[in-house]
Length: 579
Image (cartoon, rainbow, N blue to C red; front, side):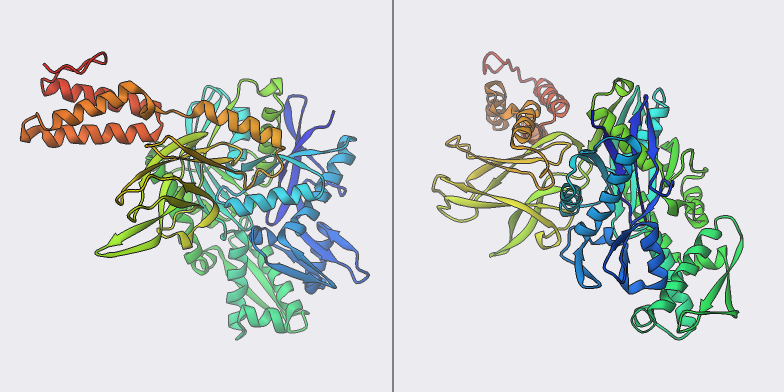
């Protein structure tokens, strides 16, 4: 029986794990190590090398190897290595192929399925590229899981009876994620997530390299072009110095000459304090996602029970100091921060496989980005397009179904092209387009003809967009499977059928329609002093009907009925009588 392996496809290093004998276990590579450097190189004779061998090329022949390509995922960027050019997806597939081969050798079986982790703030294109990288080497990617979620699964697996709020701070080589979550009774519930996909440990190394080069009257970009060997060796020195500062208060950086050779008399001293000053702006960028995750989760720092550090770059003293200052307590690092994500991916694989060892575990996740549509806005007599209107807000627990009412803007407008986007920008040009839906047959009339738009989103990243013309009941639908490409048609059909189970249509129920009509009639009957109160209750009820949140709907319906009672208006679901 083939195992589903868990893969942490990292910016700096990658590794994989498997769930065996009731626990997640790391898989060693051909060199007996758990970490495989995410580096691809080509030798002089045209052979592709991956991992430690390619990493050596980065120092001796930097023009024949490439690293940090995870940051290019989802883009068209290519890199030339020898006579061949590669995209980030192709480079990632080579790293995955190396991990797959190591797993097959270690487990003595063919590997065909995997769970792959990505930064929580990867967008749909980046997630799709990650899936494609797996598919290129014959892997069926069963799930793309966020790295902080995977890390929390490791902690949750080993401490299932805990009841606490956790914040996972994940600083890898190229990305930074913050995830707020709650563990209770074996359930891991993601509350909010935030981060930057272009901020990681490599940026701290580059900042140090840049400062050293500036003392040599060189800019980093110039040095990389004119003196590639010198820059490559200096970067190695700065990376080593950055790591050594985790153990020592002061370190030395050897400065190579233009040819890349070291002169024993040429070196610089670096202290923890000076490193913190050099990287002050980068540290400030770390604060924002932490604050955002807390704000979105409606939590204060003192409400967080444990702060978990994930990713090799969290070993930096300056990050630990930031966390202690922000939360007024020591962060946790009970598991190796380089390995905890891969172990969590293996736990997720066990959940997918319905392994008995995890049958009492439940995990929920959130939508990391806001999903919405393009709308127009009117400023005076001018109608301007290109604005973004959310339908499902970021950090909404998934699976979820939400509905909003939109309307036509031109007289006798009979069709609409609904463009779907993902992102946080006020304008669609700053967001990522996911697809579109053509709506036709809107009854002619003045501007303002309603169209109900419903988004339904699941944990696989499958998004169903549905539009309903209320007057005719005509429905239009598109299913966007941007990063579900490894799902078969049958699996997509089953997933869409599952989405139907979470849809909630209170607006279609006769009793709710009758309640709204009754209350609207009463608006003209009540005292002017109470009109605003009744209208506000009606507005909240109509909003709740569109939100598809059962608890919110029941609460606002009860509130509306209480408002009627407070105003001495009798209402019964059976009739429209007025007392």
